[in-house]
Length: 132
Image (cartoon, rainbow, N blue to C red; front, side, top):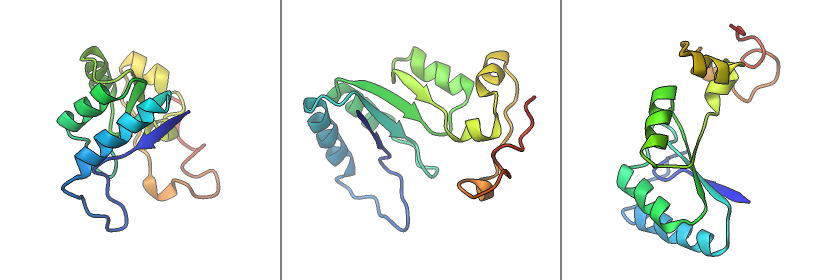
C-alpha cells in the first residue's frame, strides 16, 4: 500500500502554510513507521515540490519514492540518475500518447493532451489521439 502526496499543490483556494514542509516530513516519518510501501510525490498544478523538501521526504521515508508531474524523458532520466527517486510516474502524457514508452525510447516528440477532455465521458481526448 502507498500514498500519493502533493505538497505545495493548491486546489480550490488552499493556501500554503508556513509549517507545510515540516508537516509533510513528519507525515512521511509516520507512514514509514507503518511500513507503507511507497510515497508517490506529485508536482501538481504548476507547483513543483521544492528540492529540499523532496530530499527531506526521501531521507525520512524507508519505502520507495515515486516522482511525477511535468516529467519528460530527459528530466526523468536525470532525476533517476541523481537518486532523487526510485521510479518516475507518467500520468497525463499517457492519455495523449497511447504508445508513450516507445515514443520516449525513440526520442520522439509527445502529443499534448487536451485538459478540457480529461475525466469526461466519451472517446474524445482518450482514444482519438494518433498512435504514431
